[in-house]
Picture 1: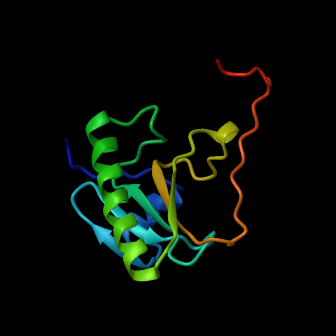
Picture 2: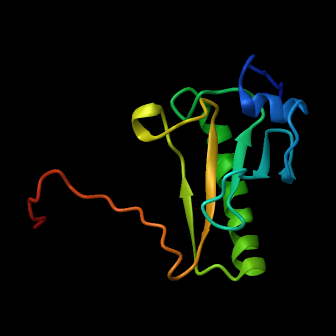
Length: 131
């Protein structure tokens, strides 16, 4: 993996990585940073963000994606331990149609608690039964 940081003008995550915008950092290494989400779904909701600007998984190298999910797992373990979370959602949205609002590769790590009211329901467009 190449560790050069490439920033894109006008990208809020690039501004966070460069220090132009302050954030509450949880983790940092050569390839990624992890910060608390400014609009959390639940307490502890954090983001794993690539230091090099990629739009999403569609243009990111596989080695970086593997590293990011390893970091997301480490954060998940810590969130379950510290916050006593009952579960974890790990979410990557890719392009606007999928709900991506910041066009910079990132993973949401969301601690979940029984009865927290957050719902992610996927309803099939076809109701064909699986055999």
